[in-house]
Amino acid sequence: PYTTLFPSTQVTRIPWSHRVCNNNIPAHANTGERSSQYAAEASCRIRYGPHTEWLASFDTDEYFIPMGTHDDLPDWLNSVQPPTNILSFRSTKAWTVYHHMEPYWDEFGIFTDGKGPRCGSQEEKRCMDKLPS
Image (cartoon, rainbow, N blue to C red):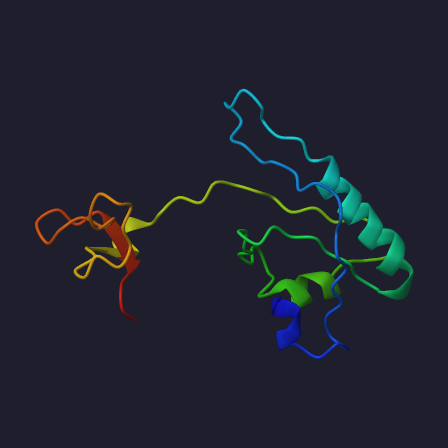
């Protein structure tokens, strides 16, 4: 596991024996059962909540973009006034800013779906990448 890459003083791995929740798209017939996710988060709050000033739970596919007068997450947290108990984040669908992007194709077929290169061909570039700085 990834936890072996860090000292035990920095990472605690707790084996979770409960069924992993499914997380289907909203239009799916079964949109998802997340009770195991909620149980894991509650377990974390109960175990570690009394021992920390801040405790956060983030999906691994999400990221933060500082807004307003804040430059980063620590700066934002330092601006929070007591007796705040819960903080929430605005969530929005990310829209690509195409003038910062350039199309490319997968010349060597590294990323394939079994039907050829996922990013098209030199004639039909189907993927986008950040423009060089």
